[in-house]
Image 1 (cartoon, rainbow, N blue to C red):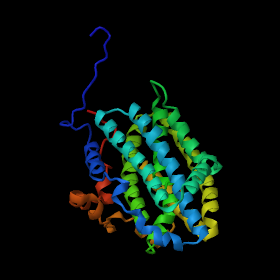
Image 2: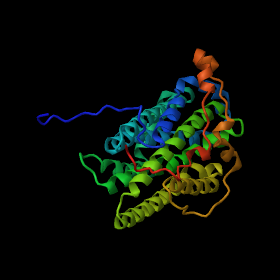
Image 3: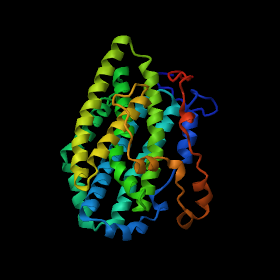
Image 4: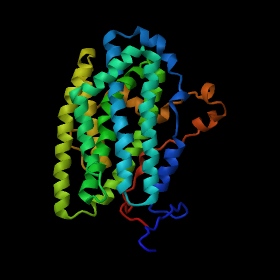
Amino acid sequence: MGGITLRIAVNWNRNEDDFTQMFWKQNFTQIWSEEEISVSNDKNVWDQLSEKERKAFVKVLGGLTLLDTEQGGEGMPLLLLHTKGLQRKAVLSLMGTMEEVHAKSYSHIFTTLLPTEEIESLFEWVTTHPRLQMKANRIGSYYENLLKKDVTKKELYLAYVASVFLESYLFYSGFFYPLYLAGQGKMIASGEVINLIIRDEAIHSIFIGLLAQGLYAELTPEEQKEVDAEMQQLLLDLYENELEYAKELYEEIGLYEEVATYVRYNANRALMNLGKEPHFPEEPINPIVENGLKTDTKNHDFFSVKGNGYIKALNVVHMEDDDFDFSDVATNDII
């Protein structure tokens, strides 16, 4: 072909592996927009919250906005660039789009609840907060290692690890408070937005975890030892930072200890998504928040804002843990 690169079209009629097409279908089924939810229904409750409660609420959402911006604008695009398999790339691209929807959904909440000057002040806080910036920069450093034509398997694997830690671990200290309030009948519409985001993040993390496990199997024993050590150090560095971040946001409203427990719970979940053993001892988490994680118990009425899309919104197929049992799947096989 005279030096011309052969470009390959994605063939959806042929499975690349045993799981990617299922993740495409589930991600596509779950597509939603922030405009489908009338957050204005929360305004009366918002006015009844204390100043400390309102401050904690908007700050956790501001932090989540930064992390979703990082994941949608840098993380997913760079992961898909170096991931083998055109169908897998397509799934990552779709996931990246939803990360941008997540980031925009927080602004949808801010616009409803806050005057413009308070929104600007919040985003300034996000930009200058050292603990929050540490999270984004530490994860982002693994993504930035992919800013080149060719990357090593170790570099790609550790970027997958960073992504799973972001999706399964770091997001959840921010999710705690909206779930906690919604579980008590407060800020229910905002809680529904968070519920939809959690539903997305759950399958994002599982999918990328499977990609990571497949790539891990291709590493040499020495490389596996090296990435295991780096993953462990990253986990602990993020944990120390997360505790300080959570303490600042939650101590004044009396929830710090429960959030710290929740952080450990989600660190273990992230490790399990990567096929690793939990690091922290098992502890019970706040029952209100635990119930909020059960997305199959939620049923938001989209009718007033979706028109004929109402039926589609209610026909989402909810996935159970067993649906994501891929222990017998060869995750590194690309046809």
